[in-house]
Image (cartoon, rainbow, N blue to C red; front, side, top):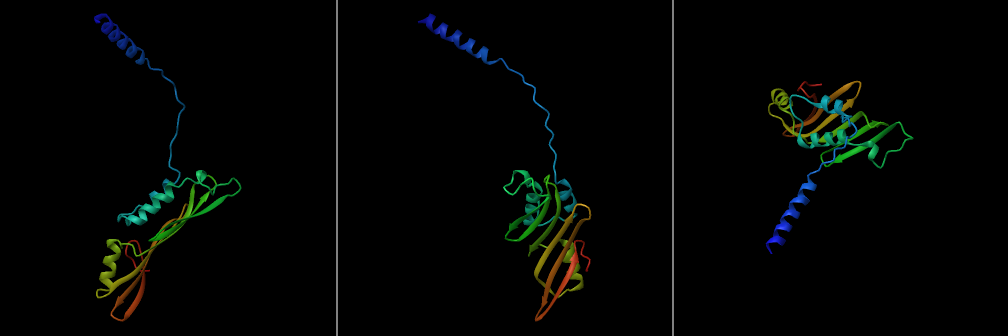
Length: 169
């Protein structure tokens, strides 16, 4: 009985010693780069965007055109729509999947502090009832961000436009 146990023990050790042999294989080099990093980099500002806006903009930047069902080799540009309940983004991609331009529109998002402060200074008794946030991105022209805001004071209503820094347009 002892010899059987000793034999099984030695056999168990030899099986593990064969498992220690590691084969090494050399893999090919892989380069990873962000195609649409310019888009995300140009949207960065001192005041962060509201969460739904930032979430949808990240989806636009991460969209892989070549793996989508819309991709065909025949076209030079592709217009893709991205929707959420708070807004939408119309994005134009070239045939390589690079983001060329976007038109973004979001309703009733949180206003940045600079815009809120500018409204409070110029219209102290007024309340914001509606706002629309628009962003236009073009790879050559850069980004423009605008706010269209509806203000009410009792039965009076006015509409104002501001840029992202709180300057009235």
